[in-house]
Length: 437
Image (cartoon, rainbow, N blue to C red; front, side, top):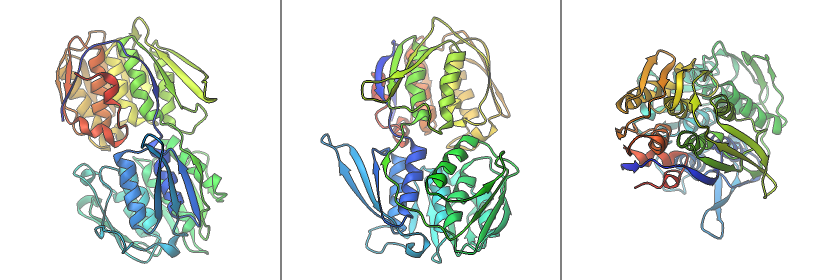
C-alpha cells in the first residue's frame, strides 16, 4: 500500500501505544509462569500478535478483554509453569511450525524458552525474518546441551529441542536479543544447572537492563559483571504471575516527536515514563541538542507528558546510536532538516534489522535530494536544504516507512511512501495522524 503525505505543520496531542519490547517480554514471562497473569493495555500490533500466537502454541492459555470502544484492554494468561507444562497445544488449529511473522524479538526470545522442554519446536517467519541469522544464539544453545538445527547461516526454519543442561558459553551479540533470550530462559532450566555466559560483544545495552529488570521483579538471583560481559544464573527457579499495565513505547514516540521537529510544529505526547528502562528515551535528549524545546511535566491523568516543539532551525551534531539502533531512521530524517553536518555513528548493527537500515535510509534520502553519505557503521548527512518531494520506498520496514512519512510533513512537496502496511507491525494508526492525502 502506498500513501502520500503533504507538507503541513504537525500540532497534535498523541497518546503513545504500549512498548513492543515490554509487551513481548511480559507476555513470555507470563506464559511460562505458574499461575495467572493480567497484562493491562499491551501493544496490539502485528509483532505482539505474533508473540501471542507463539505463546498459545507453546501451551499458555490466553484470553482477551476489550474496552468499551472495542480496543484491547487486557490479556489474561495462564502460564505453563515453566518447562514442565511446555508442550505443543493440540486443541488449536495451528501449524506445527511456529510462525513469528516479522518479529525478531519473538523469534529469538521464544526460541530460547522453547528449548527448555524435551519436545522439538520449529520456528519460521516472513521473508525479512528469513534473512536474520540466529547463528550466535543457536551456537550458545548447543553449548548448553540443546539440540538445535537451522537453515543456511542459522536462518529459519530453526528447530530447538531440550533439555537445557547448562555450562559455560560465549556469545557475541550484535543484537542484544541473543543475550536477552538466554537470560530469560536460564532461570527456568532444571535445578542443579548453572548457565554461565561470556559476552565479548554487546550492542543495545539498555535492552539488557530492561530484561534484567524482569528477573529482578521475579527475585531471580544472578551474577554479572558491571559491563555485562559475564553472567551466571542457576536453574530451578519458577516465574510467578506478572500483573499491571505495559509502559508506553519511546521507540514509537520518536516519530510524532520527529514530526513536530521537522514541521516546526508542537506535539504533546502522553503516557511516557521518563524513569522507564527503555534506551530509546535518549532520542529526546537528541531532540534537545538539535534545537527542539523538550519539556516534561505532570499530565491531567496523574502521569507525565512530554511536549516537543520544533525550533526555528534544527542544528546538526554527532551522535552515537549504539544503544539505540532503532532510532536511526528517525534521526536520519531529523538530520536532513538540520543545518550543518550530522554524523550518526557506531550503529553497524542497524544493518541486521528488518532491512539494512543504513543503506535504505541513504538511498531514500538521496532520492529526495538530501546530501547523505553511507558509512560502514552509520551515516553522514549534510542538511539545511529542504528535502524535495517524490516517491520513497519504505522497504517493508515499519521504522523506515514511518520516518519517510514524517519527512513528507516538512518537505518541499508531497512524498509518496510505499509498503506502508508495515507500520502496523509496531504502531497501528500512526500514519492516520499525518492526515494522508
